[in-house]
Amino acid sequence: MPKQVDHAGRRRLIAEAVCRLADERGLEGVTLRDVAARAQVSMGAVQRCFRTKEEMLVFALGHIGEQVMERVQARLVRSPAQSAGTALGHAVTEIALLREEHRAEARVWLAFVAQATVSEVLAGTLKANYAILHEAFTRLVAEAAEDADGAGRLDAPREARTLLALADGLTAHVLIGHLTPREAHDALHAHLADLWERSAGSVPRGGHRPPAGGPASPGTSTTRRNRD
Image (cartoon, rainbow, N blue to C red; front, side):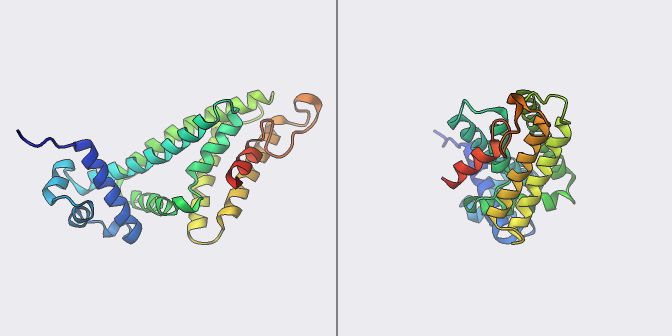
């Protein structure tokens, strides 16, 4: 009987090899031969899974995105009763890849972003990923504003774009050493606190301004959990 091959599992194995090599050398140092050696499979196995190097890179980029989103979902599941504001704080913190254990992943992600500037296929994949995140962030901003009786005070799509750009920018600043992870984390949650204050307006629910972090204190709650 012919040996059964787990093609999905092999593709993931190859994607992980791509990411390890990209972390060490950048994407320009990733060759099919080196990927095969790092994944401990034959060149033929790599070529049966992916017709071209670009196809392999697109899959690897999707693999990184899936890992990040799985962490976001896992974090939200651990606190199912949280508000939309707190959920947004958790999500943007994970996507920014600020923690030490995610430093290699952050390096690989930015390597793909850089490569996407000269690859239409990778750029298309990234734009599709950002569109999904933008839609989710827009919904959470709108829901958090409504919870604070601030519906209409915020342009939710614009605020979502700002958060996505801020998260990516902080990732880069930490990687090059301009900011420490704590400084980046504080900058991110200071922005969120300001967002919720603007949402609450001058006369928020209950007749007083909420503490930094907003009506549901997403910034404060997330900071406390990260420190624990």
